[in-house]
Length: 305
Image (cartoon, rainbow, N blue to C red; front, side):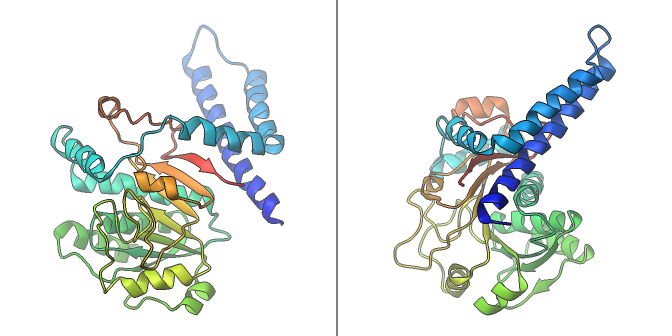
């Protein structure tokens, strides 16, 4: 399959998912609406129209995604991202483990939405010492349930109950941990995808010496990288560094809302996850978040052909 056909196929999958969600919603309407039930013919017609768009309108659909979602979406700086998190904790009484579970779940779903397990079975999940690494641990567990074979590299574990529990959960799900970062040739040979969950939006350059060779290896690998919230090593506002290894992820999974560094993202897929933002909080910060389709945990913000 050519690269062009592969990309069209991928976008077709997204639209076919939309068709299924349309059918499910219509079926619920048929079951619960007594006055104007939706007929089987209209259900088929609605879904066939969506499928038709998947087959012949992929390019137009991708372009409309870029235009619709990227034009009004708010990009947060470091202080704004911190304040949003603090309000979620203090005003809305979310706990860290709640948000971490939801964020990690959406990361796993984003991976599954873009990279099929049949072609990207072996996934290396690189986890850092902070909450971004916790998101990665949750993501690894859910990837296991989604028929992937995740392997976790966790070079600097955080000795706190929450993180110890996440590690224990992964081991109970038979997710293996490795002690040494694979070299470039091993990465290219043994893995189909890398999830980068090393540093989040609290990161401030420069990269610490322990993580420098890790980022250097990732920057040289040909394996596709999916970065969680922030491509590791990037400045949250200014983007990729000039004087240290810079990774170029194929997919960026922004959580809650994109950060300003996402404007420097040149990869193929920008996905938003973290479907837990209260409407009042979104309005307060004028996030202008796009609607999530159906029951999905993610929404594609942009897809480059």
